[in-house]
Image (cartoon, rainbow, N blue to C red):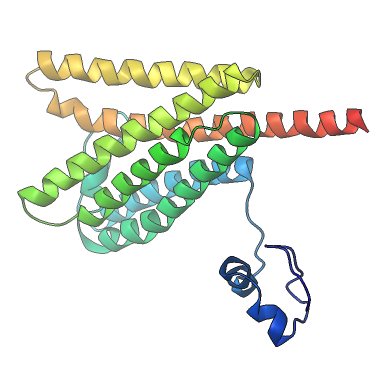
Length: 256
């Protein structure tokens, strides 16, 4: 009888019936999966900047073209919210078709981050757990977008607040942990400054909401801006992960 270690085999290798029977479920499941290349950390981080940025801006363009929202610079004028762009017409379907698959990419990224940090000595599952809840909040927000009623409005509110907050917290914890582990470069400094900037904007919005009677005129612009800054932080993270990977390769070459 042929012994096959868990996960160690060639997909194009022939196994007899007895060998396959003695494989565990995990190994047999892996054999059924197509051998698609999986993006690494830096590539995934770049995708999480490019794809959501394209998705929300294309969605806004669709909503403008169909006459559901006004034409403006939403990052500055605040003429419409991100939510309003995905409530009607073609944009209603486009937003869900784009963001639901992207939520899986987010989850994949947080798992990769957690795994990499584990390999570097940080064994707590904090990043993976927070990332899961951030993704769940994004899914809740996306599915409730465009639905009528106070309950769905509350779900959207909860979803977007928790998505922004937990995504920000994950980014902050990762950059802090990498600094503690000694993996520092310019991109990490920029990420820290970006996190500080985002935090400052969030605090500013709380003060403005309490002090200005017409804060609603500015709220949407802050929402667009914070979303963009969080996405830019993924791009900075990609730079940082490339630096870490280069350090790892250089270390292996030196040891040889």
